[in-house]
Image (cartoon, one colour):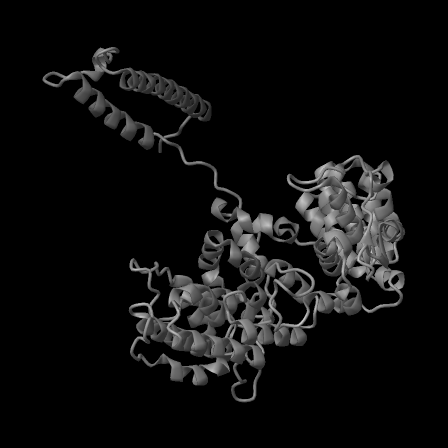
Length: 571
């Protein structure tokens, strides 16, 4: 039996290691010589003799030597230490998807259909447009995402920003855990509450203060929202404690988060923020205070606005609203959020007046105008063409203060053309006013508007109605589409409304719409091929509605088998 001297073995190993290191160092030097020759060119930097070969020109010999050294370098690599195992993925206690819904999700995520080169969408449903609806329905029912489909779900959300809120909610904590292992999914960590970090229990004060003091900005914003939902006063105390040391851009974001659950209890803090050194922070604080009708700022704005706008006899002798716009924007006005410099093309005085009226509580005008209702105030004439400025400011105030009675007055009757009605003719402003009304009332107003004016000006208004559309609204839209088809209207001009109808119509309308899928002759004076396009569009609409109905049915929980509750699947 041969015995080995331990000391001699250790020395031998050390010598072998040193020799290997010397060899690697020499290899590295020779590799750099190859790189230099390749960069400069073999005609300017001749490769060393050892890299040349008989019968080969210098470039060929250089490439052969590079290939040889590449193999040597790779073969000489030592295995790296194994990386630490990742922490286990968090559990997801939500119920598993029914089998049919899992299959449907796989189809929706796999669809990557490109638009037709002819510009025609065809009669088949657009699955990419159905994915957001599927995600919303799955989230409403509280299902968990199948684990095997999380990569495809994150890829889809990376490609489409409109999917991200619903997709990340559906992916849940496991989706955020997985996103940490792929740089392409970093958006999930940025877009999630707390940057993908689980927030502590809002009642655990020690953990809350630790994260507030040490956490990243996204984590602190999410934490503030969670604590505010549990205890608004404690959230405000948390923010007040570090407010003076926060960066200006962070103070602005923290302040903006107070919009949710804004109440009179926030007034003292917001009033102090009016003296902030950041102009943007001051403006946001003033805006939030003006949304509190009982705040001191709202009272100051009401006093200023009432001094500029009064009910009096105009030069014509009739009772009218008379306006005396501010002569200056003093320091007190600027502290309360009035921007002194108007946009290009706006007069200073009208700019200041609009801001005062917008920030004043709407209730002040009924008192100032003899107890008149909002509808009566809006109907009053205004001297010197000030009606447009006043109505626009009242519209912004109604939206900011969420005042439905003023919104109704400024919207007027749906049948009246927007350009001659009260309030504003801007459809964007009308959409904001509609958003302050209850869902049912909003849908009825838009239905009457569509019945009176058709669909040309209704796209933005339809976008603020609850989904699925109510029966009166759905019928009004379908009737307007049928009228447009019968009139031979240019079908492509209604493609936006058609797309909206595919997403928002109640699926029960599919049976009624099936009658419109027939392909007749083009009406006289119609665009060539209009009848075929209309038929194709209605076929796609019917198919999409039926597919939406099937999707919702598939998301219905499966009944228990043999009297037992269904087990949670682990995909």
